[in-house]
Image (cartoon, rainbow over all chains, first blue to last red; front, side, top):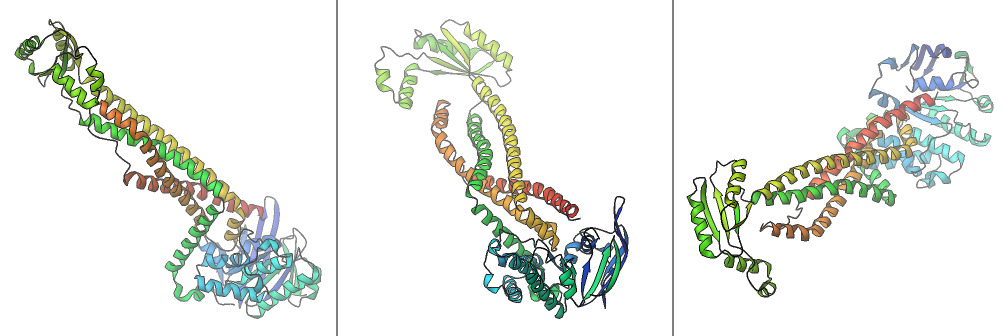
Length: 222
Length: 323
């Protein structure tokens, strides 16, 4: 079943096209990699998907519904369907690991009991159960990224979106992070990873989409 | 993992979720205050001064108004006779004045009686006893008819002044009129001062909250990215404003009580000078409660203004920066 569809999507900034008549589909439960040089439009695509920006042409359909209809307070509800991981992981350094991971649950209004249970389950999945009360400042880069992944999956989103999640990590840690994404994909989460890490792309057996100058150039298994 | 979160919340419910979010926001904001005791104390003090100063003046004026309100303001003249005028002269003048058609009544205050009352009120018996003679003159209190205008009163006073044996005529209502006018001016001054100081408090609070929002910019951006509504992002700052305001109001109430205690002596002396039996009223429960409510409202208002605008700016700035 089709989950995400970009239907002739364009995004123009002044005279420059960041995306041009882009057609792209991601199926339910699929894991796909999105690659391309800097400025190819990867981040713009993810921003459009998360409604941090809007297309200047075409439409994005999620579960068959156009994102054009998602406005106002519905934007927050829409974004909660996604778990998002960034290259710079964006942890809050005035909160401990547990409180960082609990933030999406706090937003969704989970009870304290459910929050604690889910935070521990997410920490267990990323192998950081012992660091529940740790200060994020004291964690390594790989551990910080794993906390960010735990935060992204703790509310059990339908989609997991990652923008250059291994950009600041060494190759071994990058493989570890990708393995985590694959584990989440295996339990049914639709995963989209934007990366230009060639070693990860070479290792992956998932669908690869290559963007160049705002257009989809190639799609196939890496 | 694929189950949408709404189904996972199950029995928890929207109302309980909303309460949990408020509880968390209130508690987090309070913790932020506690970990910055100096900033918190200074902000509370600034708000407290802005609230306590006008309210102390209001309380004082409130007390003084009671004095002015309690005084019999029917126009009357105090006619002081010359020091050498004896009682028969005073009684004769009383009869003359009583016969005038524009005068209703004339009361004679015997100087011996006046001296004994003075000694009783001031406890200056030793000092008075050392005087060779009674320094007080006989006094006639003249009560004119009710329809007498201010100009007619002045004219009447001038005519009484010409009578033999009269030393000085005092229009007794003048000090009340002066006090009333001063109080009216005082009320306006206090209201203007209060408005300016409250505006200052709002600006100080707004700036403090703006700095707090700036310090937690990353949190707002992350909340926005992971689906938190603007209301969710604003909420901790609204509680921060509320805690600053309520804390400032409570400190203001404390300052007011201290200032009232400190001012009670001179104000009570003033009451005595105006022959009022009352003493300075304490702030009671009304003033502290009003100050706390006012402080809390100011805090919420400032937070709503600062957070509403600044959070919106941050979110739109984040959208443009993430390109």
